[in-house]
Length: 139
Image 1 (cartoon, rainbow, N blue to C red):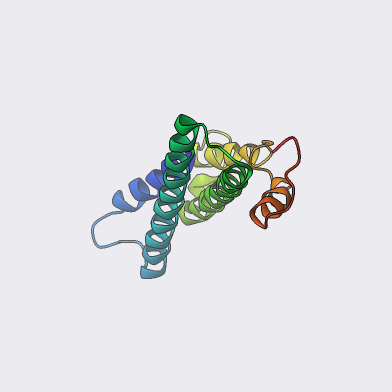
Image 2 (cartoon, one colour; image 1 turned 90 degrees about the vertical axis):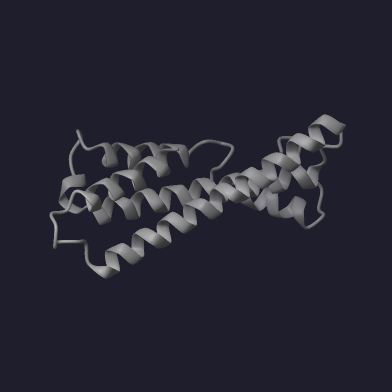
């Protein structure tokens, strides 16, 4: 949701450009790429969440699924933080300052990356499980 909001702010800024002064093609291409990356991360998150819900309902949640959940969550969080940073740069000078909603979005995304569920330090554990190695108790 935070990355979605950041990209929405970019879209609003681009739409507010005066007639005849559309953003340059590289900025538009960047926006399209960012939007596609967000959609892909959201789709991956929905897919693993659907898989996890079905497994939970069947009582078949296993370590492989837990590892996949962690890896996907970490990937999605990192992707969203990258998107927020890129959106900040697309907005330019208007993004600077405490009152800027896009600056707040970037700050919130950076805080998100420190959460135990998605911090980089979970990836080695997730990889071990996905490779068939023993899962630690805190997975």
